[in-house]
Length: 213
Image (cartoon, rainbow, N blue to C red; front, side):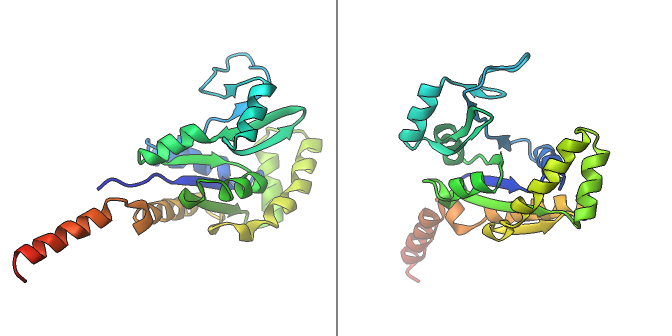
């Protein structure tokens, strides 16, 4: 039977493994798609409109916000970023799941949006602050000042853990991925995600009555 899609939110402090887990989920299920954000910043070399971002001017972005056509949005370093509602609505109506990699503020906005009934929110915790720092250092993407900034921000993210449907401690990447798969598989089977169930039950009822039972 057909099902409604899920709007899957993954959040965590930087370095907890969220991005790696999201990539693994998309290998596990190729039908999963990341939400493509809209932004008012200019495209960088090699970026493709509609694939990397939806590039729009500020007036258009503000109109989307005013018309409640953004699931979440924020201003970052002078530019606006946000998640347009229409493509996500189309995807979940067609039974496709959409993956969001957002912070707690974005997650909160989405959870309070018109699509709240489709939301599945999952927060990823590190096993320890020491391990979180080690991961940030060993991935080699940032200088010491940037890592220090990410560490300062990490507790603000962690402090909102209780606003999510599920919380996982990523002490083992393979086990955490397996738990994520289990959660998503179970949520897909929720009664609310299967709009054809009522018609099926009615068909069973008619069949039952036709048999004179």
